Structures are given as structure tokens and as C-alpha cells.
Image (tube, rainbow, N blue to C red; front, side, top):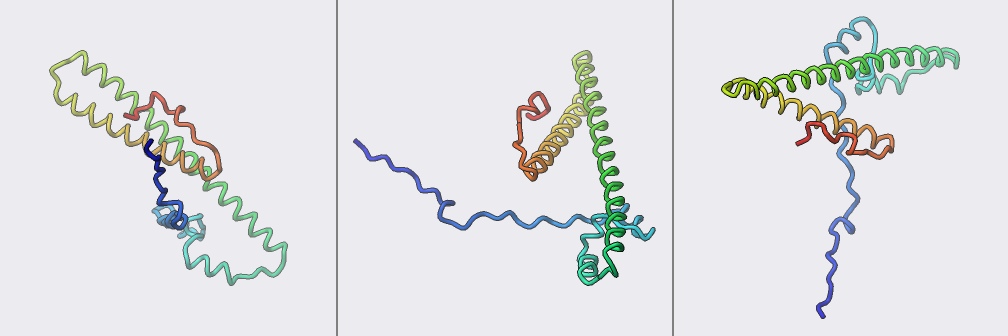
Length: 161
């Protein structure tokens, strides 16, 4: 009887894998506009200059610190609301693109001689596939951050081919 050999796991004896540090978010046009109005965003607050300044700034008393934190909380709520609206707008755009895709799909089968229409449909299909993949990847990462198990079955029927 041959001996069963169990392959060694090369990762078992090596150092634990540590994900590379996340790239800091880039300052965009809106961040610049807000900064010009003496405002701030989370992206601006995470700049090395602002972090160093925050390390050395002191507040005269607890009341002033609470007041500053309350103001910051209001700014963050507005920023979160902005990104929530941006996400909803992206979802609407995706729905519109999907509707157009379905219409093009029907037209393709009604007019068999339209090569250009076929090319447009393929291009739109690939764009929607990429959009869904990026959305799934972002959602999966977000859920894993919070310790929520990701369920791929929720995306069955999507354009994941």
C-alpha cells in the first residue's frame, strides 16, 4: 500500500501575510473648492500636514474641544450624505445603462443585419460587466471590514459572466 503524502503548506511556516498599506485618497476638485471656503473634508484632514498640525494643537478647555468635535461631526455628516447621494446616482446610471442594454438586445434580434448595433451592444455589455465587478468588489471589501460575511448568491443573475 503506498504511503499517503500530505503536501506541506508553504504559507504555514512563513510569516503572516500583511496587506499592503492603503493608498491615501487623492484630493479632488471638490476638496479644493471646500478648502478655498476655509472648510475641510476627510481627505484633507488625513493629509500629513493636517495630521501633524492636529498633533500639536491644544484646546484651552474641554468645552472648546467638544464644540470643535461637534462642528467636525456636522461636516462629516454632510460629507457622508454627499457620498451616499453619489452612490445612489451611480446606481441610477447603472439601471439606465441596463435598460438601454435590454433595449439594444431586443433591437438586435429584430434587425439581424445591424453590425454596428451589435458592436454597441457588446461595448455596453462589457461596460456593465465591469461596473458590476467593481461594485461587487467594493461591497465585498466594505462588508469584510465590518466583519459581515459576503454572500455571492445575492448577485446571481447579474452580468457576471
